Length: 195
Image (cartoon, rainbow, N blue to C red; front, side, top):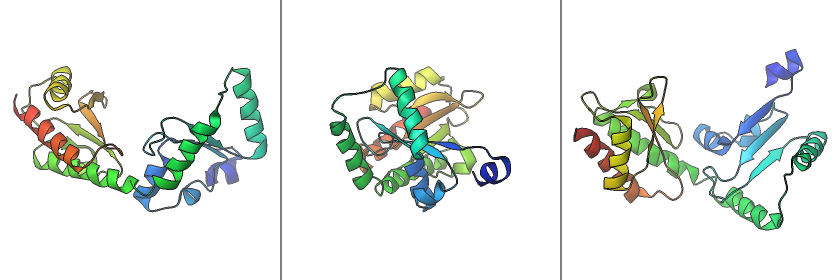
């Protein structure tokens, strides 16, 4: 952001959908991470547990123009106070607990790596998302693996990531506890090794 501002005179917007996850992982306040940007959109549901809602942050003129654009496009809601209260609760109560999600994702990644699964960045996991590839010798295709994992263990992962489409993604969140992580590890390993 600083380069864009100081040398190029360009305004910088950040899609902050996961900015709180990044801040917790880096041990850095969100304010410091965003000090050289003009605006940011912050999602209150991804990781923070609000049922819906995003916040747009910027200077007064930017927000005025954003509200005007929203109105022109038909955007608007009634009873937004209820939504706002859920968002405020999420921000006040659920940021620090993101570290628990990160720890659970690291547990999954470590267990998969120990069992021959491919992990990006040699298994380094910073937040609550684990990207993994099946071990060599596993003959299941993407659909078979995700379908069996879901039907046999109740675990949902998505596949098709990376240029070859061979990576899967597992995400931990506030509704995933330690027992569920153990079940996910067990299921992923068992299904992959059954082929």
